[in-house]
Length: 289
Image (cartoon, rainbow, N blue to C red; front, side, top):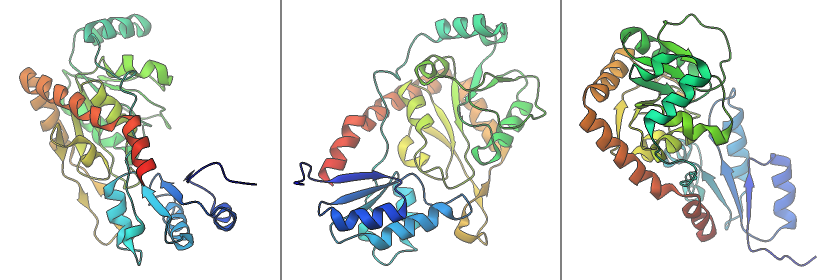
């Protein structure tokens, strides 16, 4: 029948579905790429297969310029790559009273240390690729700080006594958990992290972020962060992983905790920058593309 739309956005389509759809749909197609690498090259191969099916007026849209740059060296025509970041719900994720958030979570968990110690957070799946081990080691180096993990824990680990696992939380509860933190850590060491939503959500809640200079977090953060260098293994195929020094993470975290002025200033800057990443802006960029 007659089309009543002007374009199509496909989120991680199966390659066979895209191959069929491009023949029956004359409208422009934008294929969203969550990431390019990881999954035993599965994502990378899928990205290249989708790229090979694009018509002159279609596009691949990685979720970060980082991802587009990494993929550009493997394709013939990089002009098909049009990065558009994810957005964040600025009404849901916003700064609230930190003490009130801590009291509520302390009452839920029975852990009064939330009211007595600085709190540093890890909001993600707790696994090696997300930087679980540097986070644990940083906690070991700072016994006077409480380190909380908000996310699914995939395997039991031996951990310092100042690490608390609060478990995965419903989406509508996450603003409360972000707001109990003084500092958010995003320590990914694996390059499938194209546009980490937790970074945007933490920024929107006014948190200073300690992040690895790796994958898409850097372009989200701008100047409102503490960036940690990652040693990349240059002989690794597609250069997908790296190593982060826990001593460097510890230094950045400690510096923010010891300087309330800098911490609050970076947090305010983070919120202001997050306002550039509204879902409305993301939608308008797709329409323009």
